[in-house]
Picture 1 (spheres, rainbow, N blue to C red):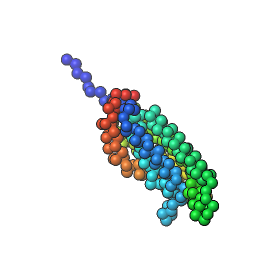
Picture 2 (cartoon, one colour):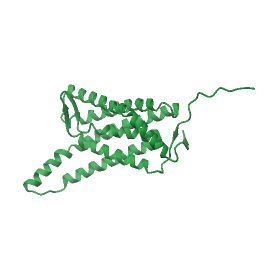
Picture 3 (cartoon, rainbow, N blue to C red):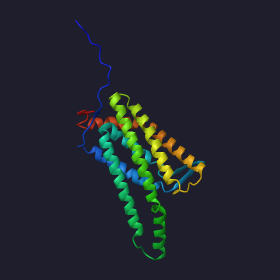
Picture 4 (cartoon, rainbow, N blue to C red):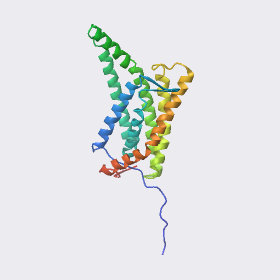
Length: 234
């Protein structure tokens, strides 16, 4: 009688197909978060010596959603979410341009309102460029690393996938964004730029690490409610 030792190989990576409403909801929230972050980022924010921008508290949520989408649906669907968010952000920026360009009232209130719009939304195109280039590069790297790690570990070590992919994605995103957006929010010297990059990277990465338990719960919740999860095996 022969016996075989149980295999120690990880189970194949599983994913879900599109078809339920969950992906659409997450995609919509991701797009709104990125667009609002672009607007908030036009304001420089200083907490004593710490320099950041007004979108600092929102943007990490886009990466949390990106992690959920990548883990549940795979790289192709995550790439679709990134491209769609990119397109909607460009559309929002074009709308801001049109609103600013439209002729307004010439009274004192109308002139002050136009000045306020130009001050708040005028720099957005450059912020959008910075955000989109950083977002596309960072999210693509984040998703690719997460899915590649899942191909090796299967359903195990979710926390390692979330933390490993987030660190790489956030670094690329932050460096690209800060390099383009710094001058718009008034950062012109090297010390301020280094501060801006380091604070942004450390803050975003720390938030993602702190959110790992919540992200894991959200991923488990979606997996259980996706009828097709596990039917698609990488």
